[in-house]
Image 1 (cartoon, helix red, strand yellow):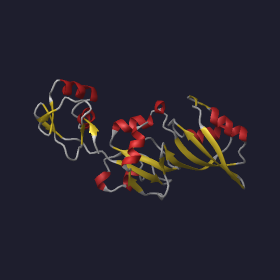
Image 2 (cartoon, rainbow, N blue to C red):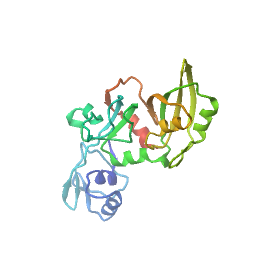
Image 3 (cartoon, rainbow, N blue to C red):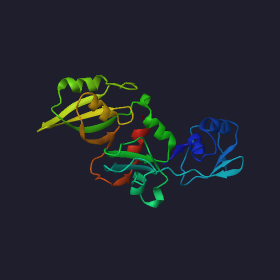
Image 4 (spheres, one colour):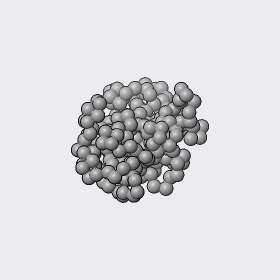
Length: 236
């Protein structure tokens, strides 16, 4: 996969993108031993050699992983209580990735892990409007008024939640199941929204992040993102 020259330089940890732009403009950057001052020039980390002031720099290879986090697994890289975490589910060669956002201990579903800090920050920031979709099962016969309140925003301790997309899926017995899409990442947000309306959460599954779908993955399974999936995230 190719990256713009300034991003490739920044990905090595040598400097920021802004500083990389300065280096390119000053004629201090070479690609494959050729001076390059074209800001739109693209490089392939696996094939191209980069130099700044005659010094070789290596582009860090980014990993992009989609995982089905099972319930009972903590979304962290290590846990002070010794509980299993999402990194434990990966082979050693990709354990340098970090989870993007969180799913609480009892929740399950789609989780992105990467060592691309810029992408992670973009996905997590509400201003980028990356919606996360969840299927939620609650105890009780949920009303249309309750669903409408979740859609318009619930007042929590730290402030009102942003508008959400909400759709009833099914009512069965003593439980109700609905779909909710949010673009925030507050701690245990959906559980707290439901609790504020008097509906305890029985099960919470994240089924999508943007265009990414959980689909055929089973709990504990993971795979690398395809080039098309990655492009869909970068377009946000």
